Amino acid sequence: MTSSVEDFDICVIGGGPAGQKAAIQGVKSGQRVVVIEREPKAGGACVRRGTIPSKTLHETASLIQRLSGRSQELFSVGSGTGVPLPSLMMRVEEVVEAHESYMTDQLLRNGVTLIHGSARFRSTREIEVTSPGQSKRRLRAEIIVIASGSSPRQPTDVHVDHENVLDSDSILALGYLPSSLVVIGSGVIASEYASIFAVLGVDVTMVDRFPMPLGFLDPELTSVFVEGLEANGGRFLGNRRLESITWDGLSQVITRLDDGTELRSEKLLYALGRVANLSGLGLAGAGLQANERGLLSVDADFRTEVPNIFAIGDVICPLVLAATAMEQGRFAVCAALGLQRVFF
Image (cartoon, rainbow, N blue to C red):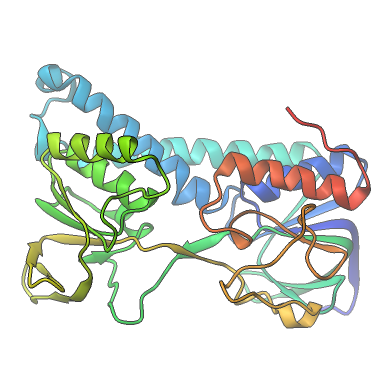
C-alpha cells in the first residue's frame, strides 16, 4: 500500500444518480472532486439493477400488450409466454449500457476523477480505496459525501438461491419466462415486477401481510393496480403472512402461508425491501454509526453528525426515487460549500 495521500476537495462514495449529481455540482463550483465507484462504470444499482432496467422491461412489456393483436407480425412469436425473454433482456442491456456510458462520460468530461474500488473510512477526512486487484490508495478530502446506495434485503429465514428463489437483482438474470411466479411483498418493486410478468403472460400471485399493495397510495389507486393485475391474469393475496418457502428439488417452489394456503410456482421473487450499503465503509473510523433502521441520520442539509460528512440517497431513506436522490446530491454539496440552493 502506498504511503502517499491524494488530496481532493470533495470525495463522493458511490457513482449512482445521487453521487453523480453531487460530483457535478462540486466541479461546477470549482472543486477538485473524486468519485469512488465499485463497478467499472458509473450508474449504481439504479442503472444496472433498478430503475433503468425495470422501467425498460416494463415499457417493453406494455408495448407487447398494446400491440398484442399484431404480436405475431411484430415479434415473430405469439403472445404471453411465447415472448422470448432473452430478446427483451437484450433491449434492457442496450439501454443500461447507454446510461452507464453517458453517466461515466459526463463525469470524466467535467473533470471528475473516477476511481474504481471499495471505500473505507480511515478518519473523518481520509478514505482508503481497495481496487478490484486488491491494490490500495489513500485519499483525503475536506468534504465527503456518502452515496453508496442499497441492496435487496436478504432474509435470514429464506434461502435466496438466485435460481429458483430470486431477489430484485437476480430476477433480471432470468433466461426464460417462467410459467408461474409468486411475489412476496407489495411495495414498489414487488408491484412493478408482478405487473410486468403478468403482462408477459406469467401466472403471477402477489402475497403480503397488508390488505392492499402500495399502501402509501390512496385506496382508489391501489384498487386500480389490483384490477389491472387481475385483468392480466394475476392475483393479490393480502392479510397473509409467510410461513415457509421451500424448493421441492425438482421444478417448483412451495410457499406456505399462515392461513394454510399452499402455493406452488416455478419461480419466486422475494421483494421485501432494501438495505443501505454501509457495512463495508468502516463508519466507526469516521465516528459514524447507522441508526436503528440501518440508515444514516442527517439534518435538512444532508449533513451527518460529523460536520464535513454528508449522506444522500438510499443510505438515508429506503427507496428514494432517483430524481429525488439527484437533487439531494446537488443540495448536499451546495450546503457543504455554503452556496444557495437552486431549484430547477
